[in-house]
Image (cartoon, rainbow, N blue to C red; front, side, top):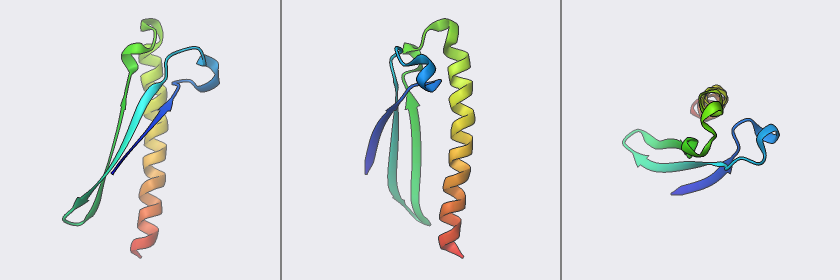
Length: 77
């Protein structure tokens, strides 16, 4: 199962820029379910802001993945 969503690196500050595409994919795995998250489209972010946008989104994804891990772990105990 896959779900696609769009987001704008930097949020409202950069609302005129092309959004990036985030794809969430769930697959059966031997130990349960495998979640894969891929964000693409950074090539559409203006070159002078691309690295900053990537860093900002990377930090956000680190925090969200921690939330997902905590949420899933709460069902395992």
